[in-house]
Image: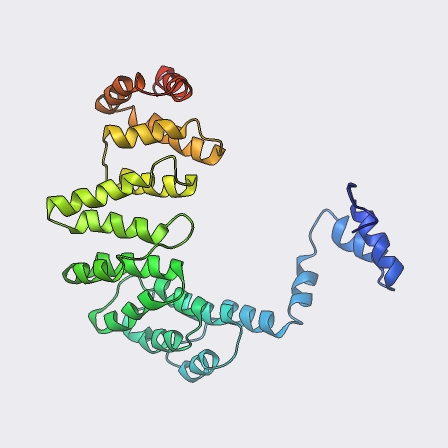
Amino acid sequence: MKKYAFQTVSTDDFLNEIKLVSDFDTRSFKSKWLEVSVFPAEEARELLLKNDFIKQYLAIQDAPLDLTNDQDKIMKILDSSAYYPIKELLVFQTISLPFESKEFLLNAALNTNELQVRQAVANAVKEIPEQFRASYENLLNDDSYFTKEVALFNLWKQFPEHRAHYMEISKDWMGFENKNLKMLHLYLSFLTDTDSKKKMDAYLELLRYTGTNFDSNVQQEALERLLQLEVHTEDVFRSLAYGTAHHRWQFVKFCKDNIRTLIQDPKNRAIFIEMKAKLPIREKTHLQRLLDEKRE
């Protein structure tokens, strides 16, 4: 670290340092792995197969276990200390299979209590039978924001009669830095509530998160939800316009791309044009450039 501090270090510099402290044949390594035009895939596979985890993973990937004939073997793997990607693979390989044939595997996967394996179940079960609902609902308690997001949406979508219950469970969730769980809760609340006041409350809270006092990741998450709801109000459009002058280029691109799409509709275009005069000079300039672009 000190020897090459503040310098541009090359691969040869790195290999020379290895030669100083070991007998490793760096010349052969370089010619075999760094200088050939074709990657030595077979040799790489042979090296990987020396690792027990990789060997088992590739074996199951190449020859999936049969849910009927290999049930004991599947259960043994799920009950073992095998590295979680192997258990994930077992779950994902059943995606297209009938639920009745894979129910034992899904329950065993949930019972591993391994976060990643339970997350695989959340993603792999596209249709949740009533008999599996209670087990699937337990995913809402996992210590994973991603698992909770997937499980909440899938349950809300498939069990309309329980939507109010799911909204109550998720009302205090926040999630990652972009508040993904809070945004999903507000989005689903807007769609669930029949009371106009509650629906308006959900809209206003989503709108609040589009404000410039929030991080751009939060703003973008809120704007995405509002646009998915097709809430095309001047307030939403104003937040997009303010985003065009943001310092984070990804957020700028998101805002500009959405404005370009929205102004294809004459009604939306009229709202942007009327709103333009109320914007600060930078935002006004960016919006005018977008309005001046040739329509597709």
